[in-house]
Amino acid sequence: MTNKIHFGWFSQCAGPIGFDSPNATEGADWREPEMYQKMAQICENGKFDFALFADHLGISVDSGNRIDTHVEQGVTVCHDSTVLAATVAAHTKHLGVGTTMSTSLTLPYQLARQISSLDHLTKGRVAWNIVTSYSKGAFDNFGYDSVPEHDARYDQADEFMDLCCQLWGSWEKDAVVMDKASGLFADPDKVKPIHFKGNYYKSAGPLNMVPPAAGRPVMIQAGSSNRGMEFASRWADAVIVAKQTVEDMKKYYDSLKEMARKYGRKPEEVKVLFIIKPIFAATEELAAQKAAEPVSDNELHRAITQLSHRMNFDLSKLELDEPVPVMNEKGITGGQTTLSRHQTAGHRPTLREIATREVVGNNLNITGTPEQVADQLQQIMETIGGDGFVLRVNPHEHGYMQEFVDTVVPVLQQRGAIRQQYTGDTLRDNLLEF
Ligand SMILES: Cc1cc2nc3c(=O)[nH]c(=O)nc-3n(C[C@H](O)[C@H](O)[C@H](O)COP(=O)(O)O)c2cc1C
Image (cartoon, rainbow, N blue to C red):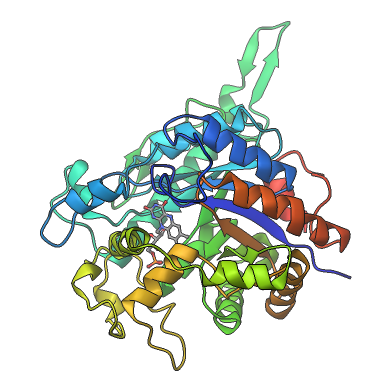
């Protein structure tokens, strides 16, 4: 039997990045809702599981503590992803909508309540992308003197999750009665304070909103470091991750599923979704031509700014055409595998190569006709064992997504490799469908 593949859309920037791309839809304005709603509707037509919006809580700074480069390039200028997810949910019916919220820069009560509301208002379609935040600009905005250390943020996040789960558990499943005859809304014996006291947080509870119908929302995570994987395997329903080789993908997939087992979870409860952006065209020659198109200097420098932001380390000081040195990852306060995932066995790429890959986004170099791309996607999934892919596409690029849904998706559907129709009512149903 053919393995079924999940697809999601990951919008790495719900902001201006991409406004100047030759592939941007004419007239698309990142400040207005239609750009995102239209893209989400295309994904829903392709029967994707979800759209996920990244988020950042401040304009990043460079090593000289200046914001200028980031402002010039629009890096980390973006919508509040929770507001955006609600706007998109109102214009879709089946597609999951993911918002990114920070465990370091939000209070657990506030987040548990907000997500509970969204879960009901979207009828079970919301997902929370759990991040710990890493940028100095963000921590500066929230009154911190420094960015907490990488692993310590995950320790705090574990306690944050414990508290959220207790708040979501503060209402028993059958607490709400809503009996019209007696006027009884809810049974007070089934709604209890939690009196949580931890190392970082205190909260009395119970939540003043009914928890998500499934007990907790769908949770997504994107940690690739060892500590990040520990965290993800404990809490996440889906993990999104970028890898450069099938071997690295398989290694990540197997390790994460094994870690999930350690936490008493079934491996199939944690979906691993790999970030890709295949290049496809009607003929192999045209696809090869597209793949050979050079990236502009603007795109290249913006990618370096984005990578620097993601690592919390200013890469602009490195030589563009020298192999990037292998760094001590423990010293990186942002994404610890941002560079090392490119430094695969026997290859030490230059900064130009890494930034170019970042612009193109074609991890694993999946290129060809729609049939050839479908072949490659299926082969990768067969080698790894599952579970699916996330297309990292800029929200300005409707044309790319429309073409993917019009050409690659039907091939995969005909082969029984992706769903023809949504069968579940909620995002969780769809994620657990196969
Ligand atoms: C695909 C992807 C998307 C991410 N999206 C965000 C985001 O929107 N906001 C954010 O603050 N961090 C984001 N992150 C950062 C991660 O959540 C994580 O904090 C970071 O990668 C550091 O953890 P690690 O060293 O375990 O990978 C993202 C990371 C990846 C790989």
